[in-house]
Length: 309
Image (cartoon, rainbow, N blue to C red; front, side, top):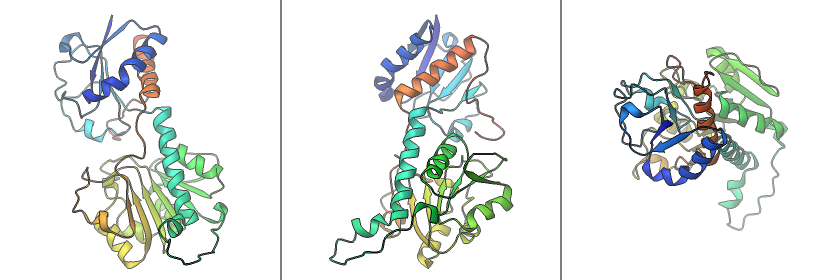
């Protein structure tokens, strides 16, 4: 019997119980999933930091910790965790992010706000350009960034991608490194940030980075709040250099009611809902990794602690 500890937000167990049990059974695994279990009996941990587990030291038998979150920076802060850690890359989370990013990119590309918010009797009859005439840059070419870049390219947008390391993606003009970042931003009318949060990317989108963008550019950030220098962002919006910012993530969440983002006319706030792990597809990933571990295969989406993702 393989013992799995579900050490996540307890309210999520109701969502995961049926699909996770099914996914494990479909893999032919003899597993029992527990909400509470003696540490010395645990083989695998399904985890997110909103649960009560904070000390991994007693889990001497555990073979891997499997995060339900795509981002793992908060988990890596836990100094008691030395076990192999996997991040969540599941089809449902990816598709949800693609839909959110494409939706907000099209919103800004088509100028939808002018009409939704401008029901004032003014006949604004200027048509939007075609996607081919609107350059988009996606920062971060992990699973989510790549999927979004490919979807935008399929719609006809000229897409530039930037990544810390060199990658080749069909239909996307790729850049890397500091010089590559400036090139990727220099002509971008819409920027989508899907970078992981590391010491190298914290406040990456600062005054210098924003100044590389053409006047009137739009920033869309569903990645991590701390990627953006908040003061530099507000200054660029107030000066007119940036046209708008649509933000789904923030350094402090929930975003306090008194935060200036809420009332800023050029900022759209969404409450960290761009996407989320879906129990059905996430359970398949968890079951696959348990099966891989049990059969001596390498784990999927294993976190590299040096890179931070």
